Length: 593
Image (cartoon, rainbow, N blue to C red; front, side, top):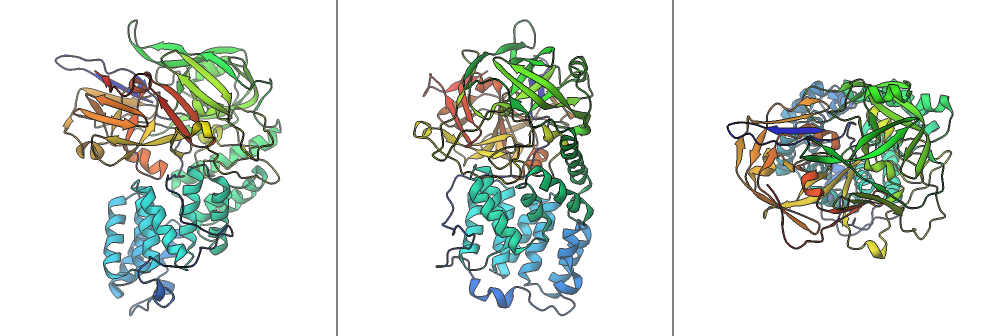
């Protein structure tokens, strides 16, 4: 949740909370372009190879080194154990001994990505490709491009390697991440199974594969995963342990999954106005009844599940199931929180039972009683009609293979027919947003775009985050988060400098659940183009979003906030990763002053 205020000689209120998410981001990613054909077995189609040097792959994969070898120095094993500093030293020694070692360059780039040093990873791959065109370097190049937000380019690199006749576990892993992020879950399951078949000892492959299991299986494999050496840093390991604790607690509690208990296929719920002061609207909320306690929670497309402040949680009788950390925008780190269970949640005509709730220990959630993510309604087609102040929920188009599934409030982790968007290593706070699982086996479906939804915009979905390609002025598209909790449109300094001028801005403060952002800038006028909408923004808030990008696993270059979204009828299909921006006034540009 971001809160932007501005002062100075001529104070201008820069309103109010812009919720980013209270929950940790996860590392799944997405892409628009269709895959080069890959056989359903997971084996690459053979044929024309576009990977230079592919014919020499087997001979050149591990060239001999005068002073040591990958086998003796073993930096890859150090990487898999999470000893990244030692792995860097090992790979650098290998490159001193053999400056043309493709595997050493690829491994070193991978370590830098784990250290969140994207620039060094990119430089390393570039150096490697200057001396070798070996497929392993192209796989590493795809991983760097993926983190840079060049998703289509990454996909192309991985597909080329596989189709060249050199199946690589990490190439299949990359394609699994892409498939999951565009709701191609069935295809993604094929890709991650193939990756694990090729290399089950890779902790990155193992993490993603665990995410496809039922709850009971996931508990078993997470226990093993945490007992073995892996490349998790301390923060991720803590989050994984919290998540395992949550799964065990839910299994022990034995109350079943969060479920809709009344037969509702469509409904309309009024949006409640939330004001900064008597004259200024800052967002919209929903009246939510948790057990017997009513409250108004900010409706936030940048959040997930339901988050309450401690006061409302205590009055609603929400006990502590597990402790967790809760974070969002800001530079002061996570806040203390916990996950509890609500016996009932009532929203409009919908009533859910046995649902987990995230709770902050603070007495307020950046000035609110709490937040409700739009993704809690992801069994429905969600229509947030901001101009008419209505939330409409209706049935999603039936997929050809659908037999019918009961709706639920997606804040649990037990039963579902689709793959999750979150890894098992996600924060325990994300336990309230993990997509449910169905024991003993799971059914995976690919996205279905119904004829009536052909005009919708396909999005990149990372966990609950909805990232949409957005054009600023005439620059190539960047990924922006759709965040109705953030008031103003926001952009990173790097993205802003590519399209307009950036200035230091000591008068603007950006705060969120994780405190204040230390350094804030402002950018001059830019025209943002997304879907059917053009938005002329006179004064963009600008700050570094590296932490957000690291948690998503790809570059997030900006945020589309409430000041823009409030003028639109926004439709969201979480099942198929689609959105529709409906502006009755198009093609006239919208303006923010």
